[in-house]
Every structure is written in C-alpha cells, then in structure tokens.
Amino acid sequence: MSSIADPIAGSPVADAKAEAKVAAAAPAITLPATGERELRLDLFRGLALWLIFIDHLPTNLLTWLTIRNYGFSDATEIFIFISGYTAAFVYGRAMLEGGFVIATARILRRVWQIYVAHVFLFTIFLAEISYVATSFENPLYSEEMGIMDFLKQPDVTIVQALLLRFRPVNMDVLPLYIVLMLFLPLILWLMKWKPDVTLGLSVLLYALTWQFDLYLSAYPNGFWAFNPFAWQLLFVFGAWCALGGARRMSRILSSNITMWICIVYLVAAFFVTLTWYVPQLGHIMPKVIEQWMYPINKTDLDVLRFAHFLALAALTVRFLPRDWPGLKSRWLRPLILCGQHSLEIFCLGVFLAFAGHFVLAEVSGGAALHALISVCGILIMWGMAWIISWYKHSADKGASKKGATGNADLAGGGA
Image (spheres, rainbow, N blue to C red):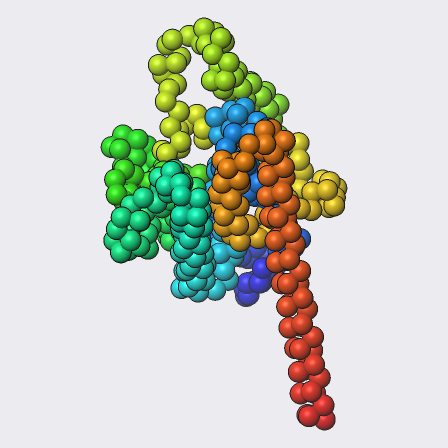
C-alpha cells in the first residue's frame, strides 16, 4: 500500500488523514493474496464432475454413492458454487488491477470458449445418438435423449440450439454457466461497490423468481431445466464468498452452534430422502410437513436444496482446512486434476454417459457391468485430465525456454 505524503507526516493528524485517504481509495472487495492454488476447490469440482457423470448413467451400484440419495442437493450445486467462487477470484483480481473494461473483455473471451465448447459438444452428442439409433435400428434412443425435434426439423432446431433454447438430455449445465458468466462483469462491478448489497439484490431476484414465476422458455416447449433467475443466487453467493464474504463469516462458521445446526439439518434431510426409497417409512413424515415441503424444486433451486448445500459447505470448511496434508496425496490427485480442467472433463463426461447408457441398454450384465462402466468412465476422465495437464505443462515449459533463449540472443546481440 503506497504511502501518502503529508507536510506534517508523523503526527497523529497526519496518520488519521492518511488512514482516511487509504480507506476511501480502497475497494469494497478484498481478495486473498496471490499464492498457491486452492486445491479444495479443484478437489470438490472434480468430485462434482464424477458425481454428475455417475448420476447421468442408469441407476446402478455406484449411483447409491452420490450425494443426491442422501439429501436435497446434488453435484450441480457444488459445481455452480465453485464456478462462481473461482470466476470471481480470477476476474475480480483482473477488475481491481486492470479495470472494468479489461476484466469484461477477459470474461467475454471465456464465455466464448464455453459457448464454442457447448456447440462442439452438441454436435458430437447428436452424431453419437443418431449413429447409435440408426445402426441398431432403435428410435427410442433419439426420443429418450430428446433429439426427435432435431430429426424432424434440423434447420430450425440448430438455430434454437445456437440460441441455447434447444438442448438434448444432460446438456443443461453449460447453457446455465454461459448465462451466469455473461452477467459476471455486472456482478463484479456491483461487488466492487457494495458486496453485501449485491448479494442482497441476488436474494431479491431469487425471491421475485418464485413470486412471479420468472423463467426462460425452451424449444420446442417448456422451460430451462436450470432457471438462471434462481440459480444465479448460488453463483453470486460463491462470488461473494471469494471476494471477502467467507473471511467475514469465519467466526460464524467456526461456531459450535452453527456446526450442530448443520448436522441436525443434514440428518433430517437424510431421513426425508430415506422415505423416498423405503415407502414403508412414509408414515413417519407428518402430512403437514409433506404439504409444506413438496415438491422440492430443482429447476428453481428450492430453498431446501440451497440450505442443504450451505450445511454441507459449512461442515466441509470446518473439518477440511486449506492446509490439510491429504490434499497433496496421490490418491486425491485424479479428482484434483479433473477439477483443474473442468470444462473439458464435463464435456467428456456427457459423451461417456450416453456411451455407458447405450452399453447398459444393449448388454445385460447386471450390477457388475454397471460398476465396470462407471469405473471405466471415471478412469477415462482421469486419463484425459492427465493428458491435458501434461500437455499444458509441456507447452508452458517450452514457452519459458523459448523466452529465455530469446532473451539470451537479445543480450548477446546487444553486447
């Protein structure tokens, strides 16, 4: 922080003036110091990608290991929260250092990359489904994966897909992410002004979405599976945490009262979800609570889902510190690698999920085949993440060597 010149520097009056000037010039948001990568974010984003892949497969043995069977939230909440957190951390620093225009340009470039990835995934996914449906003379694949409208009106459907209004099954997360990232410059600009007010406006939009049934329509009918007007709350909350909110909540998160509230809520949510799979336990749920609770809406991010995620996040932060040695373990390295290359691994996971769905539909192998396909898919995702990481590391190393050689040549020429 630069010093402020004053003709009577060193006096109490001068110190007060200096502090007032620095406070006035300081931004409203705060960022952690640049340093080692936050591996917890990579770990849980990688875990979310694995869980999303498993949940997209037909019900199998490993499906019962995903969190959606033991509470109200699932891997989608993890993915969107971490996306908001990391986006705000990276581009919030760019906005503080380079200004609004520079940060916006960088964000829009990232949005374009995600959009291109979505279009590429859409094309490959359609080709995969169409090939399987035609080769095995089974039109049910086209109907089940939601591409019948494309086969009937490909010209109209492609335009609607480019507008993010038409999406086959399992391709709803990237359009949501694209829309949320488009509004990130505005979110960061508001947070630079007043972070808490920005979060309050996000809560207000969430409440208005439920009150007035705000949504985005989809093609050919219906609405988005993940309503951006509601899911923006989780994204903005992640950004708010990254820009100083988590640090200011540290006392609350470390409180024993908070810990026990979270534990009680998670246990209650577990018993509620247990009644979904064991109908005989349905009588333990009072009718009044059932009428108030159901349906637990995923499209509009039901408040019970949001609260469930908050409880999980609070306990995770409490019991998994940033400097936990296990984060450097080779056993967790596959998850961390996948989390560090989330866009590529997500697209690969969607492709593998349909391939696994096809194999399970055509081959009767029981629980063993289900587990084998799940494990093979995860290993492929890990292998791809390792290859991408190796390639980027090699490219960066080559670029640094080239730069060093160039500098040496310039030095030699100057001599």
